[in-house]
Image 1 (cartoon, rainbow, N blue to C red):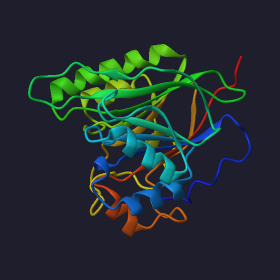
Image 2: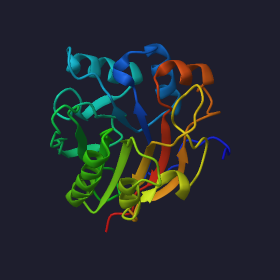
Image 3: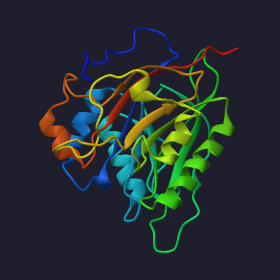
Image 4: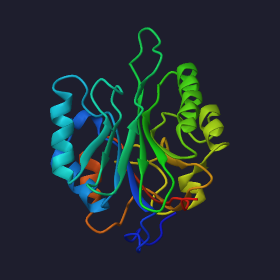
Amino acid sequence: MTTAPIAPPPGGPRRLRLLSYNIRSLRDDRRALVRVIRACAPDLVCVQEAPRYWRPEGRAAWLARSTGTVVLSGGGRTAAGPLLLGRPGAVEVLGRYDRLLPKTRGLHARGFATALLRVPGAAPFTVTSCHLSLDAEERHGQFELLLDQLAIAEQGVVAGDFNEHPDGPGWRLLASQMWDGYPTAPWGGEFTSVPENPYQRIDAVFATPGTTVLGCGVPHGLPGVTEADLRAATDHLPVLAVVELPEKR
């Protein structure tokens, strides 16, 4: 389903634009990647596959600087790939809760980049960027651990590359506790992989029930986002969401 592009949130400091993007360790066209991120004008960026071996902090800093953001949490070895970036002044960081996950021998290390954040007028909330396992059994355990991250605050957003389809058991578990952004408020494209011929939705944004999803999907047709850049930037398509946080009580 494709509708009009998401406009900048009108007023309302409790509204945020959040982008989730697997950047494949910056191995593709970095200039195209930067153009896509900047055109989406996000307040928050949940990155997956941030560089984590050779000078990871420096390359995370380069990505933040190039996209007009700052590093909020994650990156490098602290979260095994996931990284959180934010527009300067968009949020206040109250705490960082990055988590390295139990690792199955022979499989990649995985982790969560999680930050407790606050915006004016809204209750504190968490944002978690994740990149789950290719192994079905390990992945299901990671879905369960994602629910643990939600205990940090009453409200939260989880975004990432889940390596599972919406009919999978782990995805259905998460969707039983949170809003799945795209079917809740579909906008733009549905499928996120692969850019040359999208045929599956394995990347998503989820929000706790008190957080309103105003629109969510792949930003096809957004001004400044070209199909050529989407194909060149990395091996996933990004997911852009606009959410409205509940008013602080």
